[in-house]
Length: 214
Image (cartoon, rainbow, N blue to C red):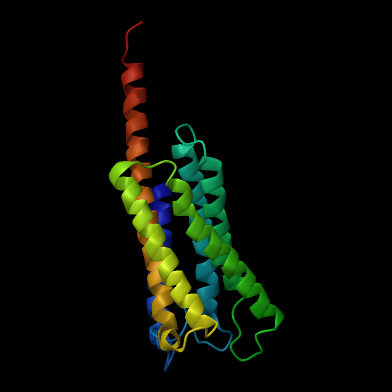
């Protein structure tokens, strides 16, 4: 159930973003950030807020399921679980309730709160697969390394566009952010699959143990 909750959180988030983008006239997913969809003046403001709370609930459930699945086989499971919880709260409820107010200066309290929670979520997101490198081996380790490289690359491109470090990246701010998000969502679905495998393995072990005659 926890693995399903993680997949549902990612899929729900993408569906809400796609729907909200279609309901905001003139909005460009390529050049504008996801946060704009939760802007108080946006027609999807309340939808994004409600979605952010549900996302946090589902993701925290996913995090505790992850801990239960990996706790006995991974010595850094507590650290990895904490990163998942921080991401769930930071990018979910935190960034959602402190919605970006595009009509005000960037020094407004709402915008500062939004940037802080988003930043916490992004850092946790980037660190999570790095911690998982200590657990996986062979093909799964290479896949985790690929996720880390792609994720960091798209994050840097997004930050470059957001803070206008490089003029060439600015017109594609929304694209970089979405690629950054999708890369890690794919990894969470991979982790959910691994959780399901471990759960099935544990159930078989318990079944075999109960069938042993004393």
